[in-house]
Image (tube, rainbow, N blue to C red):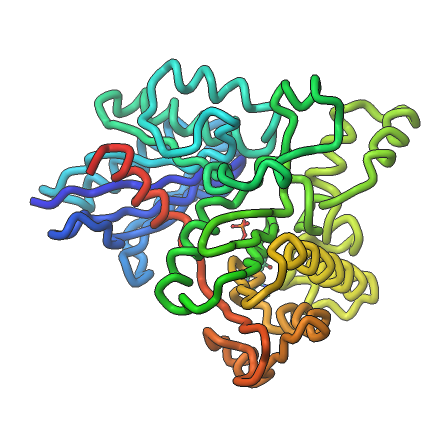
Length: 391
Ligand code: ADP
């Protein structure tokens, strides 16, 4: 009999999961993965084995009102069926915001959930769904230990200077400071870089997915990042605006928009979607012949290169640039455009390696190494959950 762990990443309309067996040396090894999609409309559960072959599927065509509890109950039942005699020992969750207080993975209890509720205004798009999934699992499997793994935690050690915002001290005292996100991804990448390119001391990592950010790593630790107080800051994203003159928010409010309308505009209707008017999905934009699609991609690339240079300044130089997540791992044309804008820093792209999706996409004599390293946030959740369990 073997122990198993479930890693969960719950969003507004989907729950992604990965199942790990704990091998003889105590490490998690992938046993299966999948997701529940279309929550709120017609939920669809898919489970695949470790190499991506489908093993189970369930649809609820009329299930628009099914909540996290019913769906996680179905998901857990399916996983328990797959596990047979093996035992699920814990579930670990990605929790976007840990605030100042939570800088390491922790086991969940009622008191913790109450404190994490207080951080919802700092991550309104993600935190409520992360916490709803934890509560749902607690309701349907009350004896299953659960761990919260925080996306902010990896940035906790950023220098005080990088964490500061230039507002009065009293406001900063309320916790208004730069936190940073995508920490599970950056921690995983830092671990991979220590293995595959330990010679790179000062690295900028670009996590380019629907949400997108950059992280400056010095000797494997985060010293600066582009998302800050919320996940709105920094790069142009699928539907989020990225860095913006705060005067624009004041203008919109004074023009008569409510705070809720501005929030919806900045989180859901901006970024690639807002600029192109076509889609927030990079693949769709790359395939589009429209000028507006091209302009959105160019703005995405321009801001990414510009902020990468800002992070290089924070690092005092740069030895490597790493692409990861959906766009970073798959969109060769976007990688090429970003590298072209970083050529002045000494980055020379090898176009053939880039098209092929090789791990190293810079030329041999490039002063800066450019790499593509696939991220694995679920594995990081599994490792953190084991740590929270004290194993
Ligand atoms: P999330 O932040 O939701 O986890 P992902 O990391 O999956 O997002 O990234 C999603 C983004 O990656 C989308 O913009 C999608 O279009 C883009 N993407 C995925 N595959 C490709 C591809 N082959 N070519 C270009 N873009 C891609």
